[in-house]
Image (cartoon, rainbow, N blue to C red; front, side, top):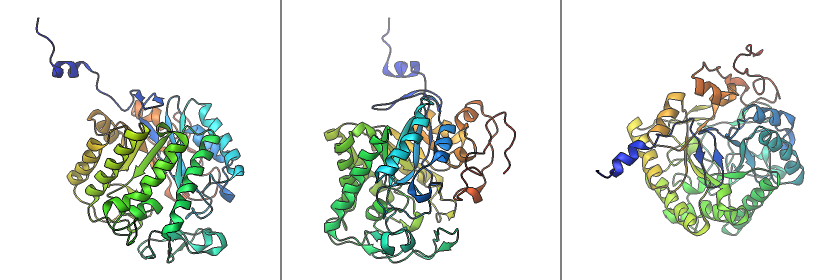
Length: 396
């Protein structure tokens, strides 16, 4: 009898689907639909309250993975109103209640650690100081910052961090990760994407430093790697994920060679994994991402170029690969079935469809989101009042 060839063996393996289980290094997921991290501005005083517990619990499924909204690692971290933090005991204690509500539904919950860097304003900074960055170049007038009163302002000139200050910022991430685990989170995602502080070091269109954190590609990757190494040594690699967006120019985060940057980051994360063990996942934003509901992030290359970049990064990374950025049901199904991604994170569709997993599974109609309530302070309207399947439409 002929022995089966590797190709025959491959054919016998069931193809993965968006709704099939997935084994991460530490956690087993029941499906591959992930709640993407999204700023929602519902945490007055930087402390999460009962509204957040309800919001995340609504979007939890048994064996599902949720990523929290960007949660700032220090008082200098925010650049939006009413974003939560994870740098003091009051916040840790408040997050425990949110995490408990998610765990009660059987879901796995990661906290996204965030520092916006220059994408802030004096109004959000302790003592009205200038925001910090890799550079002293401000974000251009093409972009506007959401102010606490709901108006939009201009981004101010940031203060360039001295080389000697950078270890202190790395330590803020490390401590925030420890705090997140104390609050009960299953892991953390380092936000290295979308023009925020870490991305301000990675991208050569922003980073104009002449020290060991600027200039060459290895130097520009150094800050992200120091943060990742510090966090993994504190809480374990299998509880740590990294998000990057090499091809996204949100908040002027341009790079002259996004593919080279993406592969350089992957190369360093692979090396770190050889030392420290497998990371939880790498989360990469597709270039078709629309920047925070403000504007399209500039002209993009062809869909073919975009998928070439994503496939190259996916092919090079040794571990669990999550994609995000404007995925529909069809695109998510295709990404997993073709092997382009292990997991797909959904953002805006999850805002208006708390039971998105079930709707995608059944291919049921989706409720449209209301953009004007994305960042408003109301703890119910546009936040926890979107209907579940079989419920009447809410009062929006």
